[in-house]
Image 1 (spheres, one colour):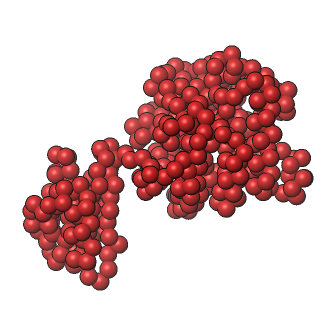
Image 2: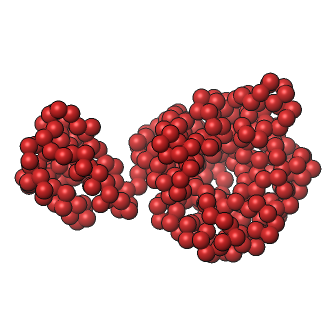
Image 3: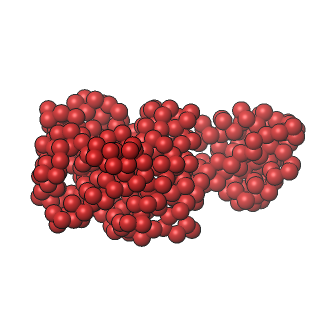
Length: 352
């Protein structure tokens, strides 16, 4: 088990982060918030996929009423976070509308006096605020001081605002220092983690399409989680947000931090493979999509590592030329023809 940085506990709706609580998976809706039905439908899909905190954009004051309806629909089921930029009054209105948390970037919300009013609204509604520092919207005085955006500038911005919040007597704080550049993001979080004990929300912002964004997120978020840094995170992809949740859980499973659903182990194939293993593994993964029981499934294609991995899994197959052996809990139970392997494996998994 990886040793985690000790952080304060913060309650977001019915979820607690920080302290000894599990690292929570987040995502953000991509629908027009004013399309309440579409937004609710997308959040339902996110929750089904394993999303534990959902952020919703509230770009205009007219959007607040739609946001209120969305919050009311999910009250007590999943925390809904208001994502607000530029207009501090929207943040206040969203807090009053029932948001479980408000995310602001103090660098673009209008200065200390306006942030002070947002803090007052959060106090009145007993909800936390995420101080969301972002490389793309850093305060100009810090950009001038550091001659550009770097980790020290991001961290100074975060600490500046944390201390301001504390001066207002407010400590229901979550902090993020996101960047689109993985080394900068990692350095920023490492530095800020040494300076404060508030929960940290991890993320590689604007990571891109799944092709590159999954790699950036896995490296950036995964590195920090492996070092014990981070209490919640979002994988930001230019894709259906359900994909963000899927990738988030794969990161947690790979680090053996949390597990949800199938952990599939499949060999990469080589010249020793005598069956169409790539096609078989893809079909197994597709057939098992949506199963949330924690199981380790092995799909192996040769005699080198196959039997050993299959025995170590809850269930697995080790295939040879035109055939394979089905293992359950380490014991070989059936020898099957190649065209029988998929159905037999899926059937036994469903029994488990």
